Length: 200
Image (cartoon, rainbow, N blue to C red; front, side, top):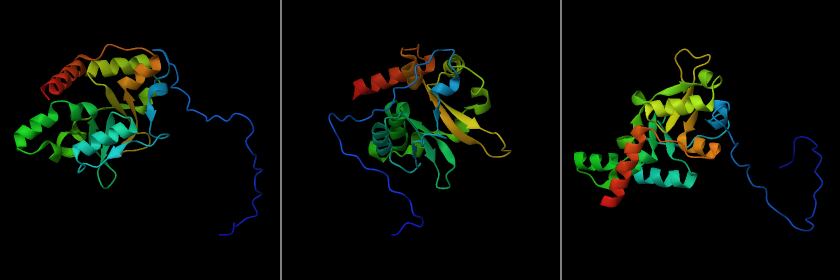
């Protein structure tokens, strides 16, 4: 296929001496006073990890591991948000309860069966995020007993909400360079996970 324009080719060079490969920059080091945007995973810059409601739960777990994430956005065929599913949902007691209630096998559980549906989700406004600090996000997550929070952009929309980012407790800890006390409700979830693993 011929080029439509006469583009000038670039000069190629051969390698001399030692050759290294660039590595991604480590997460930006932040403090409680840093702008909240510095710890937000921005879906306007990074592709969100998504999955369909009909996907088997075990497949979703594998996908999380492969992507190195702990939350997936659950998207309908029309590309609208149906809910979210987290590693805690998959590893906690939800699947066992569902198996007992429905009388099905563990590998028959679908994402839609244990996800948190849209009508139970809450989000922080992007407008608020743009004018606040990391400490405010930590306080918001702690108060709600959450380890994740979606960020919604309503600017210019009357009947359409667009998810533009997500906050993760783990990511914030990583960028702060230290552990933070886990919210009470989340701590209970971790205890449930531990008891499930012991029972297995």
